[in-house]
Length: 337
Image 1 (cartoon, one colour):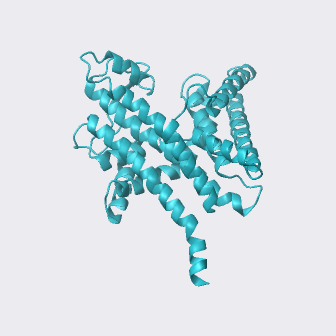
Image 2 (cartoon, helix red, strand yellow):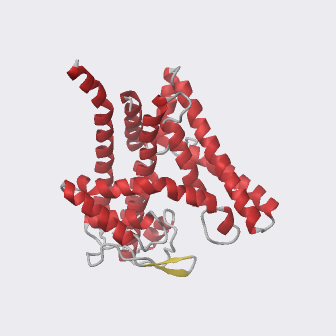
Image 3 (tube, one colour):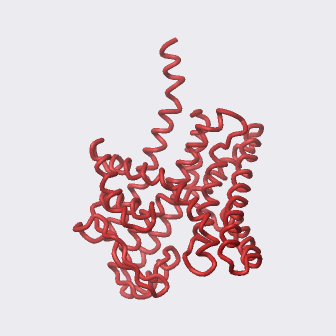
């Protein structure tokens, strides 16, 4: 893992934490979303409601959007090999794939409204960042929703793209044609955007969104479990606690219909010591989810803030480990010479 590539990822992480996603800047996910929306209309017109055609069209959309996103990242990486300006653009592109600051701002924005006597502003603000119905939520349910989105989206929006960046730092030096940090990060963001736009079990999307949703599940699977095993270390526990944390997250998260959401939420629930899960409404329909860290106290504002701090500490831990590994071979070579 070349040190230079890891330093670029580190710089991107610092840029994300410093700037977030400026609203006036065109974001790569906006471009992906624009393309997905237009391809969806074309696909639904061609499929005419036939499940087989919708599945085929969904697979084609997934290949096209993920492939083009990865190719765009790969081309920017080749430009960065030849130009200092290309390196700067590459780092900005990497930062665009991370959502550390934007997640913090979204969660803290709701927390800031909770001390008000009327919870309605907090409900409306929460409704912008979660998929569940929020119009009837109590303050306790708002806090649980914040804790669950802070934990689940930490994996989806921060640690999964960071993992694929670091994987690209390992792959790309092996051969010039292999994808690097940006190519893999943008490929992942494309799959994640496909899942968020098409990954619903209703109407034509029950077939059209299958390929994108399954690819997103696959790409998040390993990063999610790495978070579960390393989060206890970021919380100050010993190595034995890391394996215990993974076991608890896998046990509690197993009944969740998502292969990753329940595991990521359970990992944070046990690390912070709060109970998550329970009944939520989506489009007026009640859905019961498994209880995570059952018997622990309900999430409060302090617990939500601890989750955000844990994510920041875990990100620093991952980057420090990557820097250590990247700098180790030259150090060993020098020591032996």
